[in-house]
Length: 494
Picture (spheres, one colour):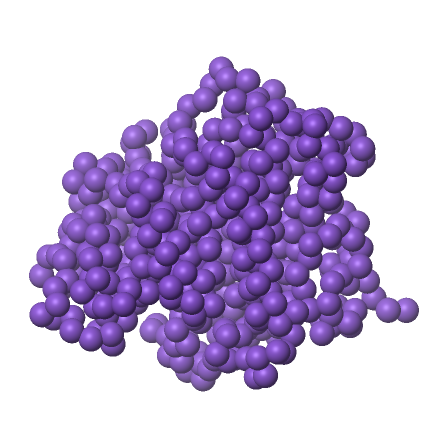
């Protein structure tokens, strides 16, 4: 008998979440499964379902770990947890051994978890137009717009993980992944790269139009005392808000080699002035202080709120408890000094680096240095300490720089980030051509996105065939493509 596919299974196991009495929706916990009719008989049912989807995105096998600082940064060789290749799964992952049982299980789970998130958004969208009468002003647009944006973003990351980049497709029409737009137990057929990108842009453009009614972004703040509906319209940086949709469009257009639109959308986010760089001279990054903002939350265009981040951080970043070394995510003083160019004049004070005052790094010794980005103190209630960034302001400047028509214009965008990090601006006397510009953008990506998962996608998009600090010296472009789970192939997806 033919095995059921992972996609088929996830559509049969959707669980939606209901709000409890907690006055912050960010901290709600999953409740019980309800029937479709009961779930979507009220506006609150739709709200609960959408919040449940965001909670699912914050789980460890999604943006709460593996699509953030976990799997993707191990692949990018940013951590040293790869010494034992025979026992530790991370050692096999760092060697791109996708046939290893542990690695295969992790990749399969990534696939199924992401399609499960997509299934939830499709369940929300299934009858939402027919139920528009249930909603108070703006909430229909918020819920439908955010659901479309989630669906697009998750498909985009699946494409970036499980398919080659555009220029590597042979032929260009070859199938990649399915794009699921309906709630069904039957999986859709796999589409080409261009078809997937087209569907992503369609969903994001629709989301952009729906969310345009609510362009003002609430910064992360205490909303105690407000009722659920007012509260639902807050915490916009923890949701796929209007500007996050534009930022996603910039990211998608860049990946599709469309510089004109990548520049257009990145500039729109930048010029909105809704997000701003932390003050490098005054921002507190000391993780033991209640005022700490080591994650630079004002720069988040979209981040997931992870209520159990302390448990994860203690396990992988050795903050307040010990863990097996094979699981730890740590770097070395030598690598960090190299990444942040501390020997170059004016770079040692980079607020992202290991030598800065109030450094975001915990130095156990020269060979064991941990990031404090995700530190959560035992007795500190600080919402900033439970955020994992997914899209940040700095990336918009990097996209704009890469898409700029001249080196001079590009330097203006790069220097905005550099000066915010307290390092010297670049000039057109030492950066005179696109090759030198590309080198500086790469170094900025590596400094900016440690423990955030974006460097792997940069390596893939730029087709790096050699990655610094690697333990796999036979690296090739094929390593950038995760294998689609065997059960999906058996089910006939490809």
